[in-house]
Image 1 (cartoon, rainbow, N blue to C red):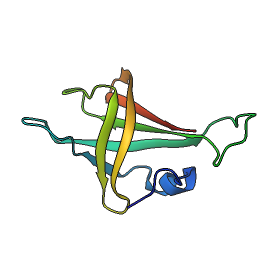
Image 2 (cartoon, rainbow, N blue to C red; image 1 turned 45 degrees about the vertical axis):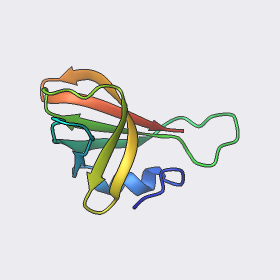
Image 3 (cartoon, rainbow, N blue to C red; image 1 turned 90 degrees about the horizontal axis):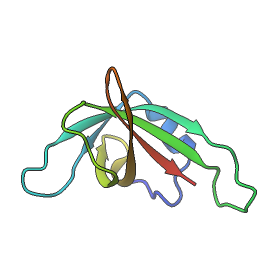
Amino acid sequence: MVDLAAASLETFAPHTGTEFTVRDEGAGAPTLTLELIEAQALPESPLPAERLPFSLIFRGPAEPALGQGIHGLEHAQLGVLEIFLVPLVPDRDGALYQAVFA
């Protein structure tokens, strides 16, 4: 399992194009699959930071859509991760979600 406090762009970039299964708890919660479609560096902050900021973009099905918040994502190599996802404007291929690590 990955320690998100120590995770970096290099942790996720090799897994671009792979699937993450949403494992949200709750009765009737659907199991969704998201694909990591982009992992990119963000501009550095002028303030001291422990890591370089980066962004992850995931694509999932148009319905059901996930709300903004922390979601449990499971990946074959990275394990179970609790990641804060923000819905973006969907594209023609489905719903988009972003996670930012600063």
